[in-house]
Image 1 (tube, rainbow, N blue to C red):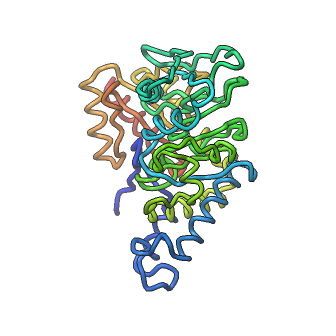
Image 2 (cartoon, rainbow, N blue to C red):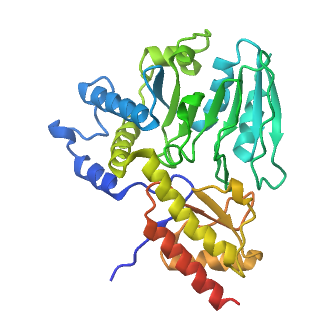
Image 3 (cartoon, rainbow, N blue to C red):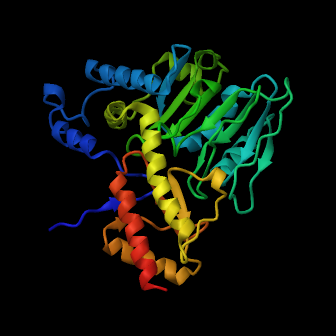
Length: 359
């Protein structure tokens, strides 16, 4: 009997099995075209249909109307650390950043490299980043936007409620995109690297108010939201295959019941692991309960050697990619949308077995 394998990688991450099977079935001949999906032109009607369906599904799942548009870009969330301030910080030339972890700090660091822009850190959850501090009231007429990192993959924290602010809100949703419920129309712009919850690496989603995407700042074309929006993300060859997979995953999400249903499933998976950790005599999770991520759960035995033994034995049991980020060590389980509930059960059961054997 073959062993059931679960992949808890933080990204590139697990994709829905039905989607992978459809990709496999269509790989050699997409829709009777006698071409692989890897070969079709980004100028073809075939791709136009994929693009239109993917965009429509994103807006539908986020419950956003035609005041918003969707861009399918490249460069990861990391490029958005630069594109956001270049395109949006144009009135006051000043932006506010909530620092809740490594990637939030990187976003702030990149913004500060832009000449004539002041990027202010308005919260600090360091040095252990075990909570999500409240954003102070920001004065009107001072900041072009407030940037938050909705979920912190390394430290396992997440915003469960968006900060109350009159400043336009920008969100990096890379690791909980379409996996956690928010009032999405409170964002002026949100972006997400797709490799955690939506598609293979190489695609970045930007969802923004059309008025922002229409404001041409005269930037170099590939950094210019307005130029990219005018060309429907095809100023150069877009990541066709990744957008195709994203369209399929978005369809799978609709079949699951949308964001509300998948968020409830994610909370159920996370609750199973957190309940075990809270009652464990060996494993610990340091994150404040009110800030716990539903998708990335770090934990440790408290001993590096024992952590490494756990990771090795878990791998032998078919539980893959449980090593924590190099910045913090320990272990981390990423329970993204495509991780089945059975994967959480398998991890919980293995942790219980390991604890019993290492008392």
